Length: 193
Image (cartoon, rainbow, N blue to C red):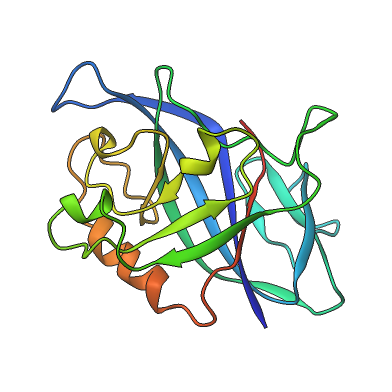
């Protein structure tokens, strides 16, 4: 069994941090899948009644998941934040007919990241995204982010439907949930910009 994360940024939901007016962000959705090793994911438009992988509905349609043969199912869903306004973001594997990356991004648990450790209570725990196409993409982490000001290209999960544009009280518990998933997430697929 393998754990895979899927990030979609649709519908495009931008926000301004009410704590710091110069900080812009965007909400997204992170789906946690378990089962066979995922080899490809795309979105079929529709409501899930005509296929897809077990009807896993995302805001833009239904996931069409290819795997190494094992069944894949959704086990959890989170809301994400990413910083906007010139900050780097991971490219999707494929978007509007352009192939950026043929496989998912790798993920590695990092228990003592010195930058993340500056946020009290984290112990520096995060997931490092592997296989970025640029030097900036190779610095992207998935880590606790109480508000978008804690992100400089990284991804901050929180409880599903937590769309607080300011301070999130669920960022800490969400990361603890992700760290507790077994087996640990080992890949990330990005569906869109």
